[in-house]
Image (cartoon, rainbow, N blue to C red; front, side, top):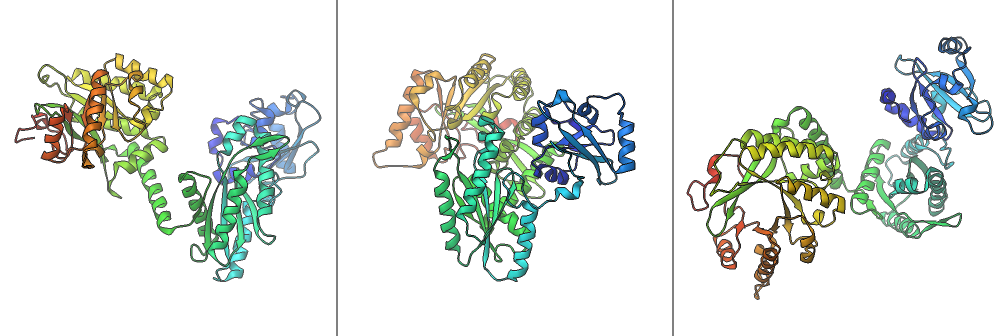
Length: 553
């Protein structure tokens, strides 16, 4: 149960409430629920959105009565209605908590009458699930250790995350997940030395202060942790398999404050996760700067897409018929010039858009650029529509929001006399589900062409092509840029073209950079191509539609 006004509850207080293992709920000045921890949500589901619903709407106990008791006594003790509790008596105590002048009340639920609770008591030092110190106790211990060390290099901070633990909770339930967390805490504790300080940070994350004189000691410890979690974990006759990612930071050279040490240890852990998980990573300052820059770019990307999309522009690289030199279309590429970061590489901002949920917003911006630049009626070229090729992400194919945006754009493209073509990378297309393949087929029936980009860099299963809704293969530049004495690359290109022709699939060669490469491809019978040697990506102007041998191209 996640109320709409839950977002009103301060994020700093949420983390405190989440620390307790007992059911906890926070109510506003009208005694309506604004935040609850997982224990409360599991216990009551969607049946208790206010204090009165907890009480069963007893006629004699009104909101005014409860608020009056809270003002008079500083607390209110209630009993949860029988219809909300399977067995026994569940009581709760409601007390006021300070929250920037706004009325907030916290309720703690226990089988027996609970002691008076306010927000300060939530700042306990023990995690109630694992019986380990919690993150507040850990930060205090880390501050003490820094004060005692006085700059001497004698300890490190370890940050441990259980990989894919969310999947365990979803598959087996939170009860099993909680028991596994307790077991993991015990095992990590056993792998550390007696004087090392271990704490649960939150969820499935742990941190430790470890005595350490040399870096190889930490590497040995991390290897021990890795080896232990490589084995399935046995609990109540069942086996559970998951791994861990670990980040390591050394005091004082990689951080001399508690804040810096924790930030850097967590950054190192995330680098380990990005590297494939099930590994440890020593903090690297250059890597940290890279991560920080990536985060700043991601935050800027979100702001710019919402408030300053004019920072993005589309550039167009012509596609040509290699035999006749005729223009056959353009591939649209996105460019971002940021006042803060300069020209940001598409490799960077497109991947960030995909991972941060911004890819639809970015695609919409590109569509808007194309509409403003190009989509005015042009005469057909030799009776055919020129291609408008745009790149899309595999994650967009099953997205109804994207489909609505795409079909609206398609109408504009067709009205202006162009043919829309979507490009997906080979590795993505070859792994799509049957439902997503069917989605592509439905788009083809509406007049959208489908192209496999960077063909030859992924799975390259030619025999599988007849099962895919594909109109074109865009063969990767590697076949032009590598040469062997036996010219095997030419044989591979010829084989691809022969197979594609039999399947009635077009072939385009990417990355043509020289006259020699162009002549070689003509000799092989290649039909179409693109590359810097033919025309670079550039802002739109009608001369881009000139033939290859035209001096204006």
